[in-house]
Image (cartoon, rainbow, N blue to C red; front, top):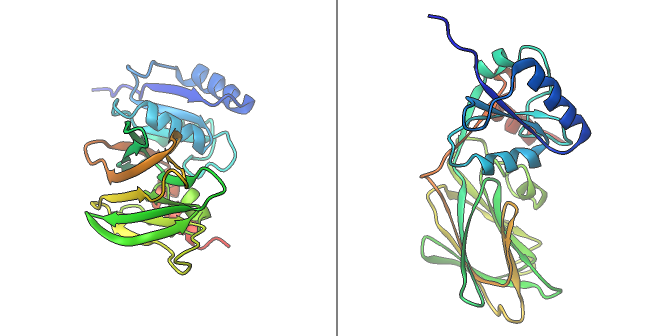
Length: 257
């Protein structure tokens, strides 16, 4: 019995090189709707990959990215030939997003999902003042800082790394809790937590020291309390070329200078 070729759905950023790549590949390999495809091919940079993952969060469609942007850490190299064979032989990287629950000063509750990280940032010149609990136990009574973030392994090489957080090997089943410009205690550099942990962050003096919370690209301002937990009910699948797996990318990043 002959196996049917993979049905691809192409999406791209609005960069000229990405739009051109989409037109070329769609003409060569065919372009199906998101509902009818087997694999979504994202053409752009890491921002486009995150956008595509969020868009297909509940569709159970694997995403194969090709770099037509800038950094492209989450993307494969852009090669037009043998695309179906590359996708068929690609390695899967299954990730679970973070679920953020944020309460504002008005008592409004907002839930959002993050693939990279949930971050809290001060909104004004005033330093943020936070109390951090893990699984219901206060671990840091007061943290004076510009902010703090909780990052997944997939997001550990993004904003987390820029904030001097650790790079997490994929499959390590831990989350990074990383301060952003900690003022007090100065020497606190963050923590690695089990992926099952629930992190709660209470904003102290919220009226004087307002803080916003962001799950990837969804921001909630003037929060008073934010909890973060891995959502094991949802999963996302990224595909990487067999000779350049996600695990290999993370390992290379740890030895970059």
